[in-house]
Length: 353
Ligand code: MRU
Image (cartoon, rainbow, N blue to C red; front, side, top):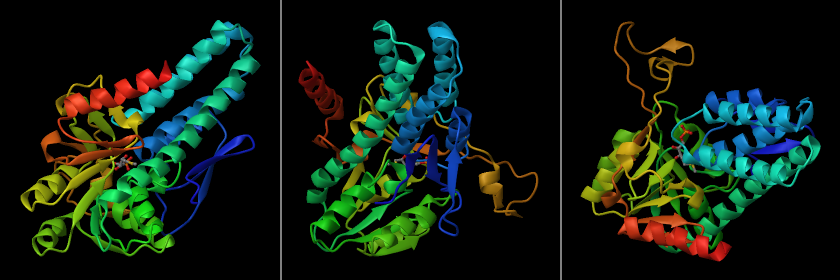
């Protein structure tokens, strides 16, 4: 399986997703600031992968800490968490993972552990977050594969694959699972302007697995739907609000509206860690605005005239009414989402007690 990121001794190694598919280069992060920079600059990207990387980065930072005494160690831990939290604002998995690391720290501190013991505890938690992410992708695959008929042509947007998670993928995990069940599935990958996650990453990882993939520009999705060349849509998510409104890569909203107009099912595949019940609706999801250079340039070549005003929101929000179902590791969540999302968490809460 494609390793998105892994520990190698004292370093975290991740494939540089800015360079794929032309070059397969592995970046070695030795410090927490290096991991934060990798997230910010999109060496690693995709909501679940960002969360896993942040947890591993925090653990790495604290393992290398030279703090004298628990008090100083706690101050350093808080600063490291703040640094990770400032990397990318939309993907809720980032904040979910940081909160989990904070709870882990608090448990150890409460038990009177030394800095070395706390660091070991944090590393165990980061490893658990990594492994659980792969497990939840596989579970989402098992759950979602039932929605993919044999012979289906599935449109996806951005990259919600192994590269966007600790492994296997959310939306692409569902497709992988359907293929593993012996179904013939063809994927249509939107190129995903401006960072080209679909053209570069989705196509690369699916072809590596021998899954038939056609890359299109996003403006081709409508005509292909109209021609009857697409059967369903499955995409990932960066944050799902309490009413089911879902933030995902810019362009997803357009795809959802098109799917609705052509009466095609539009599914989100996302782990429960992407659901944010504290955000009431899509209006309240912070949308990251990224560097204009992602639009103005292709590599070192300038595309737009100097002086043109540029907007580069990295995500958009799909209103819940366009979403036929949310595929999670615990099952498919259906409308009405305000009730069903709350119920999904109720089940988890009661399983914990
Ligand atoms: O800006 P990116 O590449 O981090 O955006 C990624 C996406 O929008 C993905 O679709 C989303 O994070 C789901 S990944 C399983």
